[in-house]
Image (tube, rainbow, N blue to C red):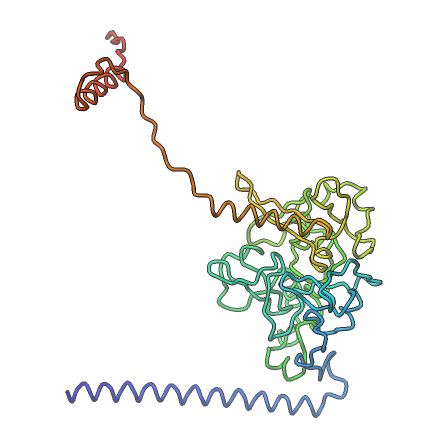
Length: 383
């Protein structure tokens, strides 16, 4: 009994010692942060771009998670509130029918811009569920949120993770001799300076999609390394294919898009850049960029064909509700319909004697099956 009490005292002492060490380290980190903040406040007359502007100063209308509310609302009708699927709705919850963008730099992807206290949604599929083995990962530079399967991330990295534009940008800076502290300051230093991810130049904050004018989001390069393309743009263009896997050069087939499509304007943003897609409803000629459509609430569906291939379809506002209702009805019917029972085929035998017992019938059937299964073969002569 005395030995057990002594072991318990030792375990309690070790546990308490660990707690004291953790508290000391935490106090040291807080002291370093306060010292850095005091130094910055004393010397930041000009400072870095965005100094003193905190993320908590949220626009009262909730501009879709964008730090500069005036930039986002300039591209929307109504207040610009963001919904679960990334679409923009006005105060009366009526979907916007036009983005009214005068400058392509003002058109951003709302799912790529959010506040720290906002729930993250995947910038590719618009879903917010994060369940193993398909969790949502965040870029340490631009704060992009994407599912592992949507962006081709096989495993959650132990350290930091960067999307491809940010990864290539920081790699180039390191190769040119720029210190890491200047490439991307630590999170606590950014918070002390009032900086957000959008204040970091380069990476996904700077690149542009070849197929649409929307800025920010989940990008990958074309296989010829010529252009950046949103993954969602590559998925919803039938001529384009997104290669699976953890690779930067993953968009192929952009050169297969016909020239007349490049000359067609998006019916939502009216910006002469990129290629819009056609509404998947038969006999509908509405054209829109996939991300422009998602911003105003157009239905972008993903279905699995009988061969297991994913089929991506986009619908205009006139046909989105009907298409969504049909897909929901089909899904409900598929869940409610039980699978057909499994059947095994067995060769049928002729019944010669109907007055025999059940045992004799089974015995005779087995004899006939055995006789039919055996086929005599000519015997090969030895040379």
